[in-house]
Every structure is written in structure tokens, then in C-alpha cells.
Length: 97
Length: 177
Length: 349
Image (cartoon, rainbow over all chains, first blue to last red; front, side):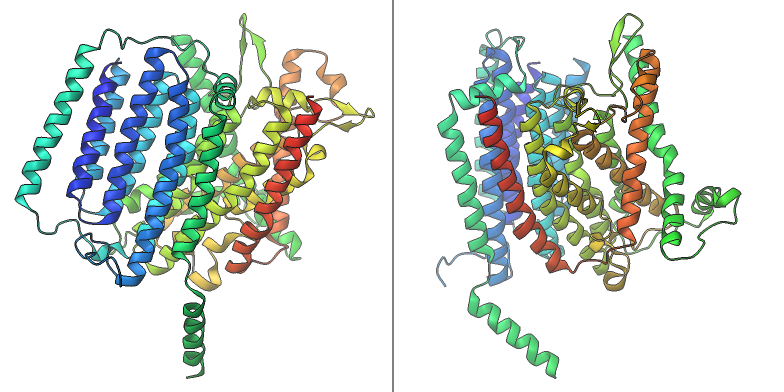
């Protein structure tokens, strides 16, 4: 069972690595989702190890928040794509028009 | 135990594919598979409800959003290989190594206290009794957050009125020609 | 351990064999029904009443050349039909064909995956239904296919919302997620002859769910994903022979699974039909048989309803479809849910 602790750490670190390295916004969002799921696995494991149900509820809250994050992130990407026809972070250097 | 190791290996493989695949759509489908594998891990751990919610929300809704948006904007023109900076690589590798070291230290030192208990009552009823008993305020705030997110998405993605009018006028003049 | 494995294997075989075996019959009914409504004969040459026509079709599908276009993405192109079929088969695991039965000294549940939140699992799995179509549309690398896939996906996601509001209303009303308890709650009679089915408690939810089934399984009047007159054949444009047959099977199995869920929620599930009580009280095994027969009869009625609607209503326009989903059905579903919750709250006071 302890193998899952290492798995969650791995998922978090891999997501972090990806979100540092990736150049396009969609991949960065994908990696953020990976980090989120790593933390969610850890929460469920805590629930198993302590016997409290609270951490399972935290996973539900995390899902709500990640749904919001993904929805807003993707709609921002679409708005950006409409304006500038790019999704690379390098190409977005000016905040105002 | 064998099932645990198998699930872990599969999750790791799919997670690696998310980060290292060249095509972003492949990465999105790998993310979907990772999320499904994690749902199986939840099931294996005995938290059945969380597993079902994971399939319903993360795999059924969030991953579909990714794929949908990727198909809306033509992703073929974007590849993941642009110029790489050497310093980014070094700094992030060191960061990741330090993080992993901290994780390993913490897990190894607490492996006895992290022993597995049997979740006696894990049913939906007890879970939601707790949710509406202790966490009702955060839950309400989460619903408000969702509502705000919906409104934000609509505002961000909707064309402005004069833009729509211009597009319509352009389309009409094209029809006449 | 071995016993449990054998039990699960047997249940899996039964639950797979029932819909897959019924498929040729359903396709035949669809063709003959279409012919009946259009005042023609339909397939009637192969075998008695044309009953062997589906077998001839299967033989044709198998021996046809498998065209593999060069411009597709090969891996996903091959994977998409399989994904579609597997995802369509998954919800069947949670659907019981009969009530629990005492045999071999223990209670045997007839569904493959026994859980006290069966209905929740079935819907969680059927939420994955759009992946097969999305994959097919993207992998075909063809504008028509892509348009069809995008349409199908948007439609399925938006109608899933109104469908789930109706499911949540029913879960509130029954106070449980357990399919067996739900069926038990619908087993009584009003005035001695009207069965206490969910559809009489919640007609609005039943209507929402019914519309949702049509949208989820991409049947007419919601088959915008295929729309022959606009986008040729939609997501399965590039598919031929057995790969196309897999999509075909997936659509029908999705339909059967969703009809079974509809029947569980609104028409008493595997509960025996009115008039069978005298026969059923003789032996528990006979009761089980009658339950299976009742469920099959109910599903057959649903399938006939699908055929009926398909050849009666015209296809929607896409904006009409989206407006209906988001502006009519979703607010109606939410209002219905609020009323139901208030009703349940005051009933339990």
C-alpha cells in the first residue's frame, strides 16, 4: 500500500516538471491536472491511514476546484487564440493591447 | 499487492506519456487514462464513492473539455518542441530532486504511522452526513465558486455584441456577392 | 475464490449475451418497423419473414474488404471503434436482470458488479460514452468526421446535465442509490391495479430522461452527429466493414443500457408486470424467470418506441438542439429538482 505514497509524490513532481518545461498553455494545464491528481491520491491515502472521512471530502472539493480551474483556463486559452492565434507562453509578453 | 504494483506501473507510464508525448492530443488522452487508473486505485483502496466521482467528473467531464478545446483550435500547427533553455533544465532538475528527496524522507520516516486502517463505514450516507454536518459552509462556497466559474467562462469566451454584428454583416455581404 | 470467479464469469457471459444476442433481432425490428411506417415491405426474402437478414448482414460485414485510408492516424483510428463498444458495454455491469435470489445457501445478486450505489456507477461509466466518437472523429483526419464528432460531443455533454438532474430527483425521491431498493420501492399498487412506478411520481423527470436517452445515444431526432444531408456520415465516415459494425453495435448497446436504466428508475425495473403475481408466488425460481421476462418485455417496448420516434420526427437544427437543451430542459430539470427536494424534506418532517 505504501507504494501509492511514492506514486503520488511522483505524479506531483512530474506535473511540476512538465508545467515548468512545456511551452504551450494547454500542455501546462494538463500538467497542472496531473499535479492535482497526485495530491488527491495523497488525500485518499491519508483517509485510509487515519480512518477519518474528512480527507475524502477534501478530494471532492479538489475536484470542484480543478473543474473551475480547467474551465476558466481553457476559456482563457480560447480567447487568447481568437485574439493572437497562438497558445505559446513565449508569444504572450504584452498584457495590454 | 500485485494489483497495487501493476496499477502503479500503468499510472506512471501514462503520466510519463502526458509530459513527454510530442502531440498534445495524445497527451490529453494519456491524461484521461491516468485519471481512469487513479480511479481504479481509489477503488482498490476501498473508497468506492470517490472512485465513481473521479470517473464521472475528472474523466467524464474535465478530460473531455481538454480534448474538445484541442479540436476547436487546430493543434497540428503547434508542436511541443521549441527552443530549450539549459538553465531551466538544471534548475528544475535540482528542484525536482530536492522535492523527491523530501517526499522520500517524510514517507520513509512515517511509514509505521502511515499504516493502513480499515475504513469501517465508508458509505455514501456517512460521507455526506459529514459533508452537510461539518463542511456545509465550504460546500456552499464551492457551489458559489462553480457559479462564478460558469459566468466567467461565458464572459471570457463570448463575442462582444458589435463583433457579432460585424460578422453577421460580413456574412450577409458575402451572400449577396 | 474460484467459486466467486466462476460466478462473476457466468454473470458476465449472461449480461453480455443478452444484448449482443438481441442485436440482430433489434436491427430487424428497426428495418421492418421503418417499412411498416412507410407502407412498404422491408427485408422479407432471407428466411421466414426476413428473420435471417441480420445474419446475412453480419456475413457481409465480415467478408467485406477492410479499407484503411492512408490519411488517418492509424493507432487511434483502430482503437476508436473498440473504445466505443467497450464503453457502451460497461454500464451493463451494474444493471440487474432479476432480484436477489437465495441459492446454494447464500444470496446471489444477478448483476456483475454489486454495489450500494449501482445507479451512480452506471451513470459515471456512461459519461465516458463520447470518447469513442471523439476519437473516431479526430483520428479520421477529415473535416466532416471532425464536425460530426464535435457536434456529438457537445450534444452529449449538454444533454447529460438535464439527464442527471432527473436522476438526482429520483435518487432523492427513493432515498437510495441501490437499484434493488429502488425496484422494491416501485413494487406496490395504487387502487389495486395501477403500479407504483416512478413515472407516476415524476412525469417531468421521466420526460427529461427520455429526451436525454435520445440525445446520448445519438438517435433521431438528435442524430446531428451523423446528419447525412450536411456532413455525409459524421464520425464514422471513414470506417468500413467490421469497424463500422462495431460503431453500429455500440450505438444499439448504448441504447439498450440507457433504456434499462430508464426502466429501473421510472418503470419498476425488473419488477414483474401487473397480472403475473399469481404465477410468481408459486416458486422463487419462477419469480426470477418472470422478472427476467418482464425486464425484456419492457426493454422491447422501449426499443419499439425508439423506432417509432425515429421514423416519425424530423431531425432538429443544431441551434434548436442546443437551445432546447440549455434553455428549456436544464431550467425545467433544476426546477423539478428543487420541487422534489422540498417535497422530500416536508415528507420526512
